Amino acid sequence: MIAALHRRHFLATGGAAAATGVQASTPLLNSLGTASPRWRILAIAPSSEKLPALARDYQQGVELGLAHAGAFSQVALTWLSAGPMPSAPARAVRAALQDSRFDAVMGWMPPALAKRVSAITEPARLPLWISDTGADLVSPSDTHLLTVRHSLELCAMATALADRVYAQCGPRAFLSMGRHESGFDFLQSFQQRWQALGGKVVGRHIADMPNNASEFGGLKQSIISHQPDAVIALYSGPQSQRFAQWWQKHSAALRTNLAGLPWLSEHNPGVHAHTIATWPQAESADAGWKARLAQAGLGWTAAALLGAEAGASLGTALVAAPQGTHMRDLWATLHHTPLVGPRGERQWVNAGTDSAGPLWENTFLGASARRQHPTPTAVFAPRGWTTGYLLT
Image (cartoon, rainbow, N blue to C red; front, side, top):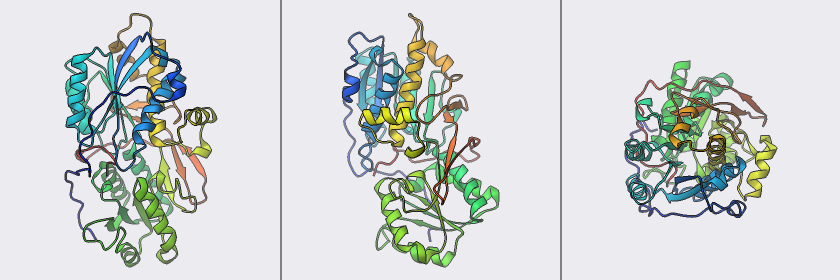
């Protein structure tokens, strides 16, 4: 059992990717053209060795959202690729802003990168739109009036998951997680809420540690010995699928409940788990958005949905702006304008440091319910990983 989870720099397995400009890559969107753009936006796509489709899904999601809002023909997007460490893309942003005129910067930026980019855009009075996983909490002091941020709200999901599991399963939880996931604030959000409810974390297991004989070595024995009411599985990417296969093989002997992040059962319908997400599953999706993503060759993935929400929300504001409007003027009203997109209507909260809205609960029976849940308030110092999310 791991007695304590130590935070440290998590180094990706590859070197920093060079930041490069790319063109709109969805054939449907290329046909719209940007011959005479009204707005010029410098955009940052995520970089992930663990989830190689992340960049494509977010980038094309943004383009799709702009097209849906009728704004794509008014916008010229110049894309940069974010590497695993925040220094390289921040330098690329600075160089691009020196070489060309842009009206705003937007993109997928974990807090460490967002902080560096904000230090560039704020003195220039350049608006900044941040998309993020919400795996780490952000303090309002790290934002300014020309910054907005929406996310997948992983910290809010973890808090709501604690409520759900405590009520449905009982007070004894066993935390099973990937090595990368062990260093993010959403883990602290879950534990903080769990303890506030009166729950106890009876055991922990971090997969693929150097002292493990195999990826999930020792996990089965540890769960059986602790006899928890529920195993909370915090995995992502291919590792989440491997854990789901492991669970299906051993669940009869474990004789306990399973709960975790939404992608735990996303590709494993035979896994019965309590999950909570800030987006609906594909079978509960809005038919119009589902068709649009399919037409653009995009799956119903979290990155594509967040990108589409960014593009549609910003695009709606751009289309409605009178001629002569400066992009800075739009940011003053964004905080009071609901986000729009495939996740349903969401709101900015905490002075635009994050988003909040409906949550979808998936139960053992496969039912999906929609409800509101308050956004978690941090009473611990946010100290997540210093790199981007899901890089390994």
